[in-house]
Image (tube, rainbow, N blue to C red; front, side, top):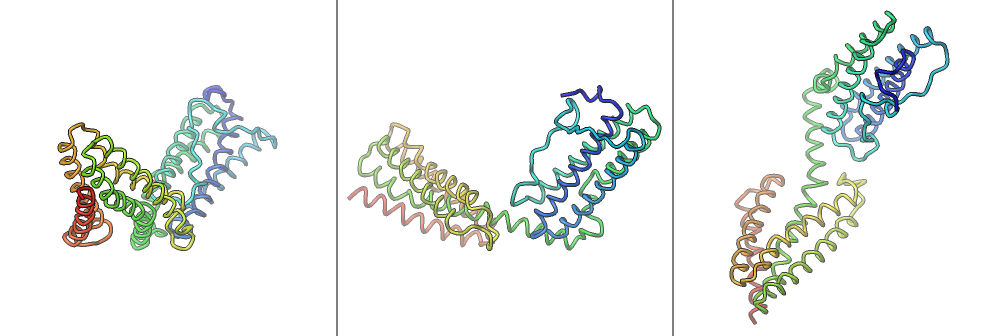
Length: 319
């Protein structure tokens, strides 16, 4: 790697040309990734990609005037101490709208810094003038929020896209997570408390709860992942939904299993029962917050079902 301060004027321009070309392709990748769900934002990134192409053309014209046709291949990763290497967010699917906007803002900020630093080191007046001009252009839309609020992304379009993003979050994270948490919190109650009242042994009860939680997590994870591939429902990739569902199932089951690491049986049982109440309250709140279910209705439904399973486990274990 070469220090930025050691770059020649030719290398500075060559690196700027490479950066502009790469940035235009990144923005085009954002546009393609957002086009189906967020067409207005996709159009913004198409325009930003076109703008980067214009910047590259300006730089390349000046480069040829000064140094001829040969253009050395200098990339970000070849230079130490300035522009950071970027993770390939533009290759990921599905793209998160807020994450993409923040990523693009960082790109504009880094580009502006590069041009201002390069202009300060430039000896040729024409090179310095162009670099300053490009720095001002990057600073002009450094805040992507400002650009997205212009005519392309109107208030109505932004509201519609935000609602689409919220719906995608619900389908890809909240819904499978809620299903897993409900299953883990409720379905493991019966075997756990049946083992507890049948043996009165905390450690054996813990092992039963651990096995039930892990088994339920694996089962629910695979069931969610295999339910659909997300191509028609917009529910995201199967592995993502399966992972979220499986992890939340395990968390739901382990919540009231861990108290049985306490050696005293009745202390562990009381704490486990309190944890169950907290878990059911959290589930009710999530349904109220994200699923538009009235809180009292959600609480009654979850509490009634949980109570039935809880009582069933105790009765079976005590028989």
